[in-house]
Length: 225
Image (cartoon, rainbow, N blue to C red; front, side, top):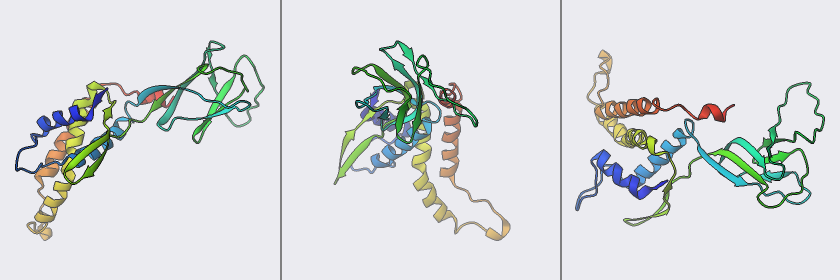
């Protein structure tokens, strides 16, 4: 776990765009934050965040609300019975016979449903799950940026790859601007391609993102089992 303040300092070096007196950043901080949050959402498809939570089940009920950052189920551990609950498998024609030795669960919408009505104490049922990464959150008042949530949970090994993807994303506004300028310089009738150095640079960083991420096996395969 790190903080956005530390990531921002690294991006200053990576982008060669540190804050200077009397100068405007080429890549403003709000743009960097949004680009980082977008990059985190892409990283989730490769390596989601690992989390656990205690399931809160009301007396006489058999369902619990899933955490707000829930992506996919890993398992439910029953500390009282010292075993893992089994995920329900549903196929056409299946008939379910209650088996107290093999309680099952399933998820639907934002809730998890348990086959058995159980008596438990707080902490008996632990939910292990894959989660989304929380966004970096901030407010802007004039020239002052205040971070209301700046904890960053992305893996350390992914930081360099993330910086490349953030850079490629940050170049999009300038790429659009360069395209608007260059559209008056090309000869449409001759089929001359549009020359946009920002687009070429963005492609360079995107290539590095893919290259670096390929160095690590994706955890998403385990998520989709």
